Image (cartoon, rainbow over all chains, first blue to last red; front, side, top):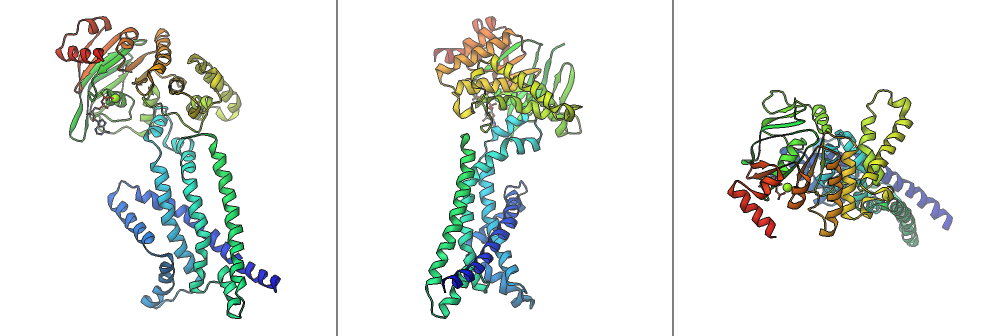
Length: 213
Length: 261
Ligand SMILES: Nc1ncnc2c1ncn2[C@@H]1O[C@H](COP(=O)(O)OP(=O)(O)OP(=O)(O)O)[C@@H](O)[C@H]1O
Ligand SMILES: [Mg+2]
């Protein structure tokens, strides 16, 4: 029984991992693009992105998932075919909005003097970005990023509301036939996953700890 | 021919005029100090000369060649601006060292990046970099920090950081080296080491423009002093004359307030 449960939970866990990885791969770059929008000197674009980020951060992710999944069908009579696609759209948009704010905070926290020092030393804009400020930005965004990414691990459990078979849902299948313990057992999976991530981020932060400022 | 000529330079921030027609010239090997009360436009002038700000009117000539003219129709390309910036060096009040690089890397980074556009760089990369590092070590030695090559800025005192910043600017061999209050961010006991480095540079006849509030230093080190007041050059002359016999009432008032401090 224990082995059977473990195996089917592992199957759910693989979906959890898939949601996690795909969301990260797409929302990390998208967040960067959004952050450029929110720092743009073109005021309408800046306001548009700010409103967008406000809406995404101001409503529950669960509501966003439901919206992406059901609204196209209700409005245009074109129901979303793949649950996974709908889910990923909601996750990517949601996380990109959060990441964009982290990027913005990191980029804006670099003192103007760093750019100016690069300029008076005759560096090009590209050189200033890659050789002077990029590492400093990474160092500053690493702690909030690791927070957000660890939250994403647990947010994947929201997938079950549109019946995507992730980890919790796999355990719930057992609850319906009378076994409650698999549900608690899922906690072990989340803990191990987050533990590994914590170690990775701790290692990266330590690597960048050789300088201050 | 003067190495630098600044003509009719004007600059506003919004509607406030900050520079109202600045004219001066500088000869090769000359040390020029700029003094003046807070808000008189000294920093703004240095920033215009270093192309961190664009003046609205006026011209800047280096070795007789116009490198900036506000009246020219077509704006300067980024590349032209960068080439102009390479002629100048600027040492900031707040050092602005790159925190993630050690002393040697801070001093050699820009030179290495610049070397990439040299012909034959790819074939001789190793030798070129080795040469650059050797030169950087020599410059770091000049500012007395040979024992700190591998240290990061956060491990240095303010005075040491500023000396690294001076070395970093020197490494590019600028025609004119500018300083914006190089000791203002330092504890009093650390100003001496920075000023003595600048004194050494003056002895080697490096052309310099120094904005400073250290009057006795300005008196000793400069060949000429400019007193700025409210966006104009109110008085200009040899330090002995300017400090001992100020012509204008404004300079007299300024000197009496700073010297009584
Ligand atoms: N970025 C800016 N935006 C708007 N106004 C500015 C800006 N920088 C400087 N100013 C104004 O321009 C005037 C001249 O400033 P500047 O920094 O050149 O003076 P300063 O002579 O260097 O003074 P200090 O001795 O305090 O360094 C001041 O009135 C200042 O408020
Ligand atoms: Mg100033």
